[in-house]
Image (cartoon, rainbow, N blue to C red):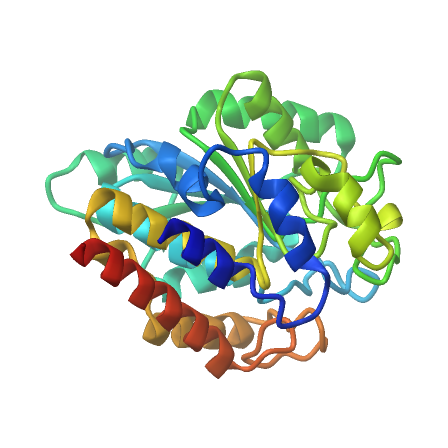
Length: 323
Protein backbone atom coordinates (compact mmCIF):
# COMPACT_ATOMS: atom_id res chain seq x y z
CA UNK A 1 0.00 0.00 0.00
CA UNK A 2 2.93 2.36 0.58
CA UNK A 3 3.86 1.91 -3.07
CA UNK A 4 0.32 2.86 -4.08
CA UNK A 5 0.45 5.96 -1.88
CA UNK A 6 3.64 6.94 -3.69
CA UNK A 7 1.98 6.51 -7.07
CA UNK A 8 -1.03 8.63 -6.09
CA UNK A 9 1.27 11.35 -4.76
CA UNK A 10 3.36 11.27 -7.94
CA UNK A 11 0.48 11.66 -10.44
CA UNK A 12 1.83 14.17 -12.95
CA UNK A 13 -1.45 15.85 -13.87
CA UNK A 14 0.41 19.05 -14.69
CA UNK A 15 2.67 17.20 -17.17
CA UNK A 16 5.85 18.68 -15.71
CA UNK A 17 7.99 15.57 -16.01
CA UNK A 18 7.91 14.92 -12.26
CA UNK A 19 6.71 11.35 -12.87
CA UNK A 20 10.10 10.64 -14.46
CA UNK A 21 11.83 11.62 -11.22
CA UNK A 22 10.14 8.94 -9.12
CA UNK A 23 12.22 5.90 -10.05
CA UNK A 24 15.64 7.52 -9.45
CA UNK A 25 14.36 8.91 -6.16
CA UNK A 26 12.95 5.52 -5.16
CA UNK A 27 16.22 3.78 -6.03
CA UNK A 28 17.95 5.69 -3.23
CA UNK A 29 15.74 4.17 -0.49
CA UNK A 30 15.02 0.64 0.65
CA UNK A 31 11.27 1.27 0.97
CA UNK A 32 8.61 3.40 -0.75
CA UNK A 33 9.29 7.08 -0.38
CA UNK A 34 6.29 8.00 1.77
CA UNK A 35 7.25 5.23 4.19
CA UNK A 36 10.89 6.32 4.28
CA UNK A 37 9.81 9.89 5.00
CA UNK A 38 7.34 8.88 7.71
CA UNK A 39 9.70 6.45 9.46
CA UNK A 40 11.62 9.03 11.57
CA UNK A 41 8.33 10.59 12.69
CA UNK A 42 6.92 7.41 14.24
CA UNK A 43 8.97 7.86 17.41
CA UNK A 44 7.99 11.47 18.10
CA UNK A 45 7.15 12.30 21.70
CA UNK A 46 5.51 15.27 23.39
CA UNK A 47 7.64 18.37 23.01
CA UNK A 48 9.80 17.03 20.17
CA UNK A 49 10.40 19.55 17.39
CA UNK A 50 10.16 18.96 13.64
CA UNK A 51 11.33 21.74 11.34
CA UNK A 52 9.07 22.25 8.31
CA UNK A 53 10.51 24.56 5.64
CA UNK A 54 8.18 26.08 3.06
CA UNK A 55 7.10 29.23 1.27
CA UNK A 56 7.68 29.89 -2.41
CA UNK A 57 8.13 33.56 -3.36
CA UNK A 58 6.45 33.06 -6.68
CA UNK A 59 6.40 36.69 -7.87
CA UNK A 60 9.33 38.16 -5.97
CA UNK A 61 9.96 40.75 -8.70
CA UNK A 62 6.55 42.22 -7.81
CA UNK A 63 6.61 41.85 -4.02
CA UNK A 64 8.31 39.62 -1.43
CA UNK A 65 4.87 39.16 0.14
CA UNK A 66 3.47 37.12 -2.76
CA UNK A 67 3.85 33.41 -2.09
CA UNK A 68 2.26 30.22 -3.41
CA UNK A 69 -0.64 28.22 -2.03
CA UNK A 70 1.43 25.12 -2.72
CA UNK A 71 3.65 24.31 0.23
CA UNK A 72 2.05 26.20 3.14
CA UNK A 73 -1.22 24.26 2.76
CA UNK A 74 0.50 20.87 2.87
CA UNK A 75 2.78 21.94 5.71
CA UNK A 76 -0.21 23.16 7.73
CA UNK A 77 -1.93 19.78 7.34
CA UNK A 78 1.22 17.87 8.31
CA UNK A 79 1.91 20.22 11.23
CA UNK A 80 -1.62 19.67 12.53
CA UNK A 81 -1.16 15.89 12.36
CA UNK A 82 2.15 16.02 14.25
CA UNK A 83 0.66 18.24 16.93
CA UNK A 84 -2.70 16.51 17.32
CA UNK A 85 -1.37 12.95 17.34
CA UNK A 86 2.09 13.25 18.94
CA UNK A 87 1.86 16.54 20.86
CA UNK A 88 5.01 17.47 18.95
CA UNK A 89 6.07 21.02 18.10
CA UNK A 90 6.04 21.85 14.37
CA UNK A 91 8.49 24.66 13.62
CA UNK A 92 7.61 26.27 10.31
CA UNK A 93 10.46 28.26 8.75
CA UNK A 94 9.95 30.58 5.81
CA UNK A 95 10.81 33.98 4.45
CA UNK A 96 9.91 36.62 7.03
CA UNK A 97 7.78 38.35 4.39
CA UNK A 98 5.51 35.29 4.16
CA UNK A 99 4.93 34.67 7.87
CA UNK A 100 1.54 36.41 8.01
CA UNK A 101 -0.25 34.29 5.36
CA UNK A 102 1.50 31.12 6.53
CA UNK A 103 0.42 31.79 10.13
CA UNK A 104 -3.14 32.35 8.92
CA UNK A 105 -3.05 28.98 7.15
CA UNK A 106 -1.72 27.32 10.29
CA UNK A 107 -4.57 28.80 12.31
CA UNK A 108 -7.05 27.43 9.78
CA UNK A 109 -5.51 24.01 10.49
CA UNK A 110 -6.25 24.43 14.18
CA UNK A 111 -2.82 25.53 15.37
CA UNK A 112 -1.99 28.52 17.55
CA UNK A 113 1.32 30.17 16.60
CA UNK A 114 3.52 30.69 19.67
CA UNK A 115 7.12 31.09 20.82
CA UNK A 116 9.39 28.17 21.71
CA UNK A 117 8.97 28.78 25.45
CA UNK A 118 5.19 28.87 25.03
CA UNK A 119 5.27 25.70 22.93
CA UNK A 120 7.26 23.90 25.62
CA UNK A 121 4.72 24.95 28.24
CA UNK A 122 1.88 23.80 26.01
CA UNK A 123 3.32 20.36 25.30
CA UNK A 124 4.33 19.69 28.91
CA UNK A 125 0.86 20.34 30.33
CA UNK A 126 -1.73 17.60 30.73
CA UNK A 127 -4.34 19.84 29.15
CA UNK A 128 -3.74 19.69 25.40
CA UNK A 129 -3.13 22.83 23.35
CA UNK A 130 -2.26 22.53 19.67
CA UNK A 131 0.62 24.86 18.82
CA UNK A 132 3.18 25.62 16.15
CA UNK A 133 6.08 28.03 15.78
CA UNK A 134 6.31 30.26 12.70
CA UNK A 135 9.89 31.43 12.26
CA UNK A 136 11.31 33.91 9.76
CA UNK A 137 14.81 33.75 8.29
CA UNK A 138 17.31 36.51 7.43
CA UNK A 139 18.31 37.54 3.92
CA UNK A 140 21.95 38.27 4.70
CA UNK A 141 24.13 35.27 3.91
CA UNK A 142 26.26 35.38 7.07
CA UNK A 143 23.20 35.93 9.25
CA UNK A 144 21.46 33.04 7.52
CA UNK A 145 24.32 30.67 8.29
CA UNK A 146 24.33 31.81 11.90
CA UNK A 147 20.56 31.44 12.26
CA UNK A 148 20.68 27.93 10.81
CA UNK A 149 23.18 26.97 13.50
CA UNK A 150 21.14 28.62 16.26
CA UNK A 151 17.90 26.97 15.12
CA UNK A 152 19.43 23.50 15.15
CA UNK A 153 20.77 24.17 18.63
CA UNK A 154 17.52 25.64 19.97
CA UNK A 155 15.00 23.28 18.43
CA UNK A 156 17.07 20.05 18.31
CA UNK A 157 14.71 18.77 15.58
CA UNK A 158 13.98 15.09 15.13
CA UNK A 159 13.63 15.71 11.39
CA UNK A 160 13.84 18.56 8.88
CA UNK A 161 11.28 18.51 6.07
CA UNK A 162 11.38 20.95 3.16
CA UNK A 163 8.20 21.33 1.10
CA UNK A 164 7.99 23.31 -2.16
CA UNK A 165 10.98 25.39 -1.19
CA UNK A 166 13.21 26.49 -4.06
CA UNK A 167 16.77 25.29 -3.60
CA UNK A 168 20.03 27.00 -4.42
CA UNK A 169 21.68 25.97 -7.68
CA UNK A 170 25.43 25.26 -7.89
CA UNK A 171 25.75 28.91 -8.99
CA UNK A 172 24.15 30.18 -5.78
CA UNK A 173 20.98 31.32 -7.57
CA UNK A 174 17.32 30.31 -7.44
CA UNK A 175 15.17 29.73 -10.52
CA UNK A 176 11.49 29.17 -11.26
CA UNK A 177 9.98 26.65 -13.66
CA UNK A 178 10.52 28.97 -16.62
CA UNK A 179 14.22 29.19 -15.88
CA UNK A 180 13.91 32.76 -14.62
CA UNK A 181 16.23 33.87 -11.82
CA UNK A 182 14.02 34.79 -8.86
CA UNK A 183 16.70 34.96 -6.18
CA UNK A 184 15.82 38.48 -5.08
CA UNK A 185 14.34 38.67 -1.59
CA UNK A 186 14.72 34.93 -0.98
CA UNK A 187 16.26 33.70 2.29
CA UNK A 188 18.83 30.91 1.95
CA UNK A 189 17.02 28.44 4.19
CA UNK A 190 19.03 25.70 2.48
CA UNK A 191 21.57 26.22 5.27
CA UNK A 192 19.19 24.66 7.80
CA UNK A 193 19.10 21.45 5.77
CA UNK A 194 22.88 21.47 5.42
CA UNK A 195 23.31 21.99 9.15
CA UNK A 196 20.86 19.16 9.89
CA UNK A 197 22.75 16.80 7.60
CA UNK A 198 26.03 17.61 9.31
CA UNK A 199 24.44 16.45 12.58
CA UNK A 200 22.80 13.30 11.25
CA UNK A 201 19.27 14.69 11.53
CA UNK A 202 16.97 13.05 8.93
CA UNK A 203 16.21 15.37 6.02
CA UNK A 204 13.24 15.05 3.68
CA UNK A 205 12.53 17.03 0.53
CA UNK A 206 9.19 17.38 -1.23
CA UNK A 207 8.96 19.03 -4.63
CA UNK A 208 7.12 19.01 -7.92
CA UNK A 209 9.30 20.90 -10.35
CA UNK A 210 12.98 20.03 -10.04
CA UNK A 211 14.01 23.36 -8.52
CA UNK A 212 13.22 22.49 -4.90
CA UNK A 213 15.50 21.63 -1.99
CA UNK A 214 16.26 17.91 -2.24
CA UNK A 215 16.17 17.64 -6.03
CA UNK A 216 19.96 17.44 -6.14
CA UNK A 217 19.40 13.78 -5.33
CA UNK A 218 18.05 13.20 -8.85
CA UNK A 219 19.89 15.95 -10.74
CA UNK A 220 20.56 13.84 -13.82
CA UNK A 221 16.87 13.04 -14.21
CA UNK A 222 15.88 16.69 -13.65
CA UNK A 223 18.33 17.74 -16.37
CA UNK A 224 16.93 15.14 -18.74
CA UNK A 225 13.19 15.28 -18.17
CA UNK A 226 12.25 18.68 -16.71
CA UNK A 227 12.11 21.74 -18.97
CA UNK A 228 15.04 24.05 -18.16
CA UNK A 229 16.27 21.34 -15.80
CA UNK A 230 19.96 22.15 -16.21
CA UNK A 231 19.27 25.74 -15.19
CA UNK A 232 16.78 25.29 -12.36
CA UNK A 233 17.90 22.10 -10.58
CA UNK A 234 18.66 22.58 -6.90
CA UNK A 235 22.07 21.40 -5.76
CA UNK A 236 21.10 20.10 -2.33
CA UNK A 237 20.07 16.45 -1.91
CA UNK A 238 18.01 15.22 1.04
CA UNK A 239 18.03 11.78 2.65
CA UNK A 240 14.56 11.13 1.22
CA UNK A 241 13.09 12.93 -1.78
CA UNK A 242 9.40 12.82 -2.64
CA UNK A 243 8.70 13.98 -6.22
CA UNK A 244 5.00 14.84 -6.12
CA UNK A 245 2.50 15.93 -8.75
CA UNK A 246 1.81 18.85 -6.40
CA UNK A 247 4.07 19.34 -3.42
CA UNK A 248 1.15 19.51 -0.97
CA UNK A 249 0.31 15.94 -1.97
CA UNK A 250 3.69 14.79 -0.72
CA UNK A 251 2.75 15.97 2.77
CA UNK A 252 -0.52 14.08 2.62
CA UNK A 253 1.27 10.91 1.50
CA UNK A 254 3.62 11.18 4.49
CA UNK A 255 0.59 11.54 6.75
CA UNK A 256 -1.04 8.52 5.14
CA UNK A 257 2.06 6.38 5.60
CA UNK A 258 2.40 7.55 9.18
CA UNK A 259 -1.23 6.63 9.85
CA UNK A 260 -0.65 3.09 8.57
CA UNK A 261 2.58 2.67 10.56
CA UNK A 262 1.08 3.86 13.83
CA UNK A 263 -2.47 2.60 13.38
CA UNK A 264 -3.78 6.15 13.92
CA UNK A 265 -6.36 7.08 11.26
CA UNK A 266 -6.66 10.53 12.84
CA UNK A 267 -3.31 11.34 11.20
CA UNK A 268 -4.98 11.27 7.78
CA UNK A 269 -5.73 14.47 5.93
CA UNK A 270 -9.36 15.01 4.92
CA UNK A 271 -10.96 16.58 1.88
CA UNK A 272 -12.98 18.91 4.13
CA UNK A 273 -9.80 20.24 5.74
CA UNK A 274 -8.14 20.49 2.34
CA UNK A 275 -10.88 22.80 1.14
CA UNK A 276 -10.68 24.89 4.29
CA UNK A 277 -6.90 25.27 4.09
CA UNK A 278 -6.80 26.24 0.43
CA UNK A 279 -9.57 28.79 1.02
CA UNK A 280 -7.71 30.17 4.04
CA UNK A 281 -4.42 30.40 2.16
CA UNK A 282 -6.00 32.33 -0.70
CA UNK A 283 -7.90 34.59 1.68
CA UNK A 284 -4.61 35.33 3.45
CA UNK A 285 -3.05 36.50 0.19
CA UNK A 286 -1.23 33.43 -1.16
CA UNK A 287 -1.62 32.87 -4.90
CA UNK A 288 -1.72 30.00 -7.33
CA UNK A 289 1.88 29.68 -8.51
CA UNK A 290 0.79 28.77 -12.06
CA UNK A 291 -1.84 31.43 -12.64
CA UNK A 292 -0.63 34.19 -10.32
CA UNK A 293 -4.21 34.63 -9.13
CA UNK A 294 -5.25 34.95 -5.50
CA UNK A 295 -7.86 32.22 -5.84
CA UNK A 296 -8.53 28.92 -4.01
CA UNK A 297 -6.57 26.79 -6.48
CA UNK A 298 -3.12 25.19 -6.35
CA UNK A 299 -0.79 24.78 -9.35
CA UNK A 300 -3.59 25.56 -11.77
CA UNK A 301 -5.79 22.75 -10.45
CA UNK A 302 -9.21 23.35 -8.83
CA UNK A 303 -10.20 22.39 -5.31
CA UNK A 304 -12.02 19.31 -6.53
CA UNK A 305 -8.81 17.74 -7.90
CA UNK A 306 -6.92 18.24 -4.64
CA UNK A 307 -9.84 16.95 -2.59
CA UNK A 308 -9.97 13.89 -4.86
CA UNK A 309 -6.28 13.12 -4.30
CA UNK A 310 -6.83 13.40 -0.55
CA UNK A 311 -9.76 10.99 -0.78
CA UNK A 312 -7.65 8.47 -2.73
CA UNK A 313 -4.87 8.62 -0.16
CA UNK A 314 -7.35 8.22 2.68
CA UNK A 315 -9.15 5.27 1.07
CA UNK A 316 -5.84 3.51 0.40
CA UNK A 317 -4.65 4.02 3.97
CA UNK A 318 -7.89 2.91 5.58
CA UNK A 319 -7.90 -0.24 3.43
CA UNK A 320 -4.32 -0.98 4.52
CA UNK A 321 -5.24 -0.54 8.20
CA UNK A 322 -8.06 -3.07 7.85
CA UNK A 323 -5.75 -5.84 6.69
